[in-house]
Image 1 (cartoon, rainbow, N blue to C red):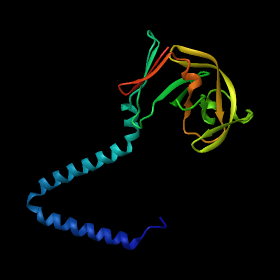
Image 2: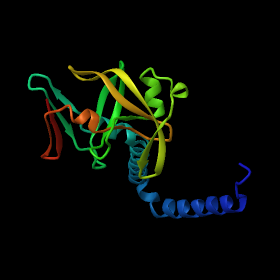
Image 3: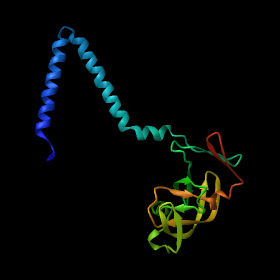
Length: 193
């Protein structure tokens, strides 16, 4: 509260009192109607604040989810609002959300996701290099025991762990080429085994 400007606060309080007094004088004959209108505006204001505060939760609930259809070996991934496709896979028993990236030649785990999958990033040998939009980064090549998408399982898959900062892990071509068909249809990415 050291940055509080008492002069400005006093000015705002006086302005509020002046406007409030004018409203009271103008509507004193219809006080019950005025109170009802003030209550309605207060509820609208609280509703807007609550909606703004809960927007991330609401967006997660409304966001389209991936669907896995086991009988046909087909996975349909709806396009996210940011225009990308996200797919949640289980890597060594840990659920990890990937950004589907056909421009990435490999599956690349972020350091945090590698840790969640049971790898120890500090003990990996970062001998590889990858060219990214942010420049060259060091990578470590490892094998994961299992990558699962619903009932569809792949074993002994080679992935890279990025030593640099990454927001999301990337699902690149070393995984995507295991599918017989990859297509974008009606705003959705469709993978078929």
